[in-house]
Amino acid sequence: MDYQSIESPASCYVDFCLVPLGTSSASVATEVAEVQKVLKASGLKYTLHSAGTTVEGPWDEVMKAVGKAHTAVHKSGVVRVQTAMRVGSRTDKTQTAEEKVKRVEDILASGK
Amino acid sequence: MDYQSIESPASCYVDFCLVPLGTSSASVATEVAEVQKVLKASGLKYTLHSAGTTVEGPWDEVMKAVGKAHTAVHKSGVVRVQTAMRVGSRTDKTQTAEEKVKRVEDILASGK
Amino acid sequence: MDYQSIESPASCYVDFCLVPLGTSSASVATEVAEVQKVLKASGLKYTLHSAGTTVEGPWDEVMKAVGKAHTAVHKSGVVRVQTAMRVGSRTDKTQTAEEKVKRVEDILASGK
Amino acid sequence: MDYQSIESPASCYVDFCLVPLGTSSASVATEVAEVQKVLKASGLKYTLHSAGTTVEGPWDEVMKAVGKAHTAVHKSGVVRVQTAMRVGSRTDKTQTAEEKVKRVEDILASGK
Image (tube, rainbow over all chains, first blue to last red; front, side, top):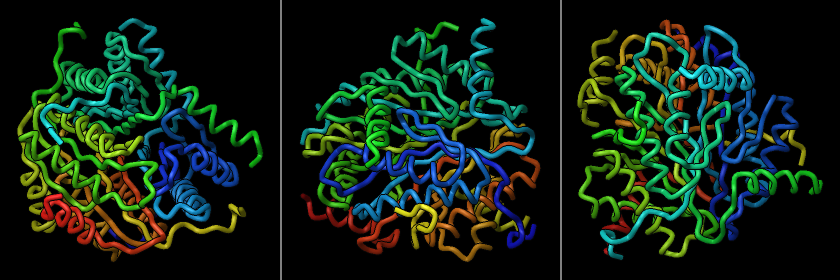
């Protein structure tokens, strides 16, 4: 395989949780708000939940947005930023975030 | 410090995503539904979202529930199970999942 | 399935990275050292690497050890602790950490 | 802040674990070997350990390499790929993977 010429996936989903280190406060809400502003500016589809943020889109754009989130938090004065991320890509079909949840709920509702 | 006698945190939150390996299908909905059944039986508070499930409660109970989820999926015939997890504990205050999201939304709404 | 009576997996591996929040320093080395002390006291097999620590053993014991690590760091004065974790369990065979790496290296060495 | 013009971090480390879904085998060694080939071709510094692979370098290059790893595994016939990732960036200093481990070992050796 020619690893130089292959591209990143055309679409993926990323669920991530960014935390600032070395800040005097244990709160992360300011930094998480900053992340949402970066995502809004990116034009990508994203959803905030209580344990992270889910973003969907082309791999390079999504990863660029998360990278910008690190930079934005650094620029606010945080010297160290740590992110835990789950990333998925698939080539067999397109499934939105809503469809994923619905499929599980349908199985549960069917009582199987 | 006496590491033998210290206990796990009295409360924590866990956000996790369990995937089955070595199944012929690329779908994970059946296994995710199984996870929800284990959590329902646990009596813990949990929420399904498109990229995982968030659970709150005492550390040992939450981790036991995730362990049972692995076992339940194994019992359904899956020989290998992999979970990505984020865990948080804090001693300064109690904050529900809803409060976490609201704090971020308040910051965004304030326009700061 | 009787979700009350099923047990956690008899063996698993966990790879985790614990970070303290709300500390004035961006360094995490003191907390990571504390984690190693907890693991040493646990009697479990563990290995420190540059991006985390890998532990092997029965699910409940491994998770108890990670919980104690949170508590130990809390006791050192850190009010919020966040851990990113990957957990795997399998029922088809036992494979040590060394064997996992060796299998990949053998494939690479075979030139396939 | 101008979120359009800010860049991703100039350096970061990523520790990741990629798994294939919907493959008949529970083994992941072939896919992990594929990941190593992509990383070798990238020219980035990387280390394989039993629970993942650690890569260091500029954010965009590292993320591109992980994206190519997804694509390479897709091209080998796997329709769904899932990766768990931890990413860190810091602006206060440069620290290699070896230095991170050494700092912890020094604290442990000092007996504090």
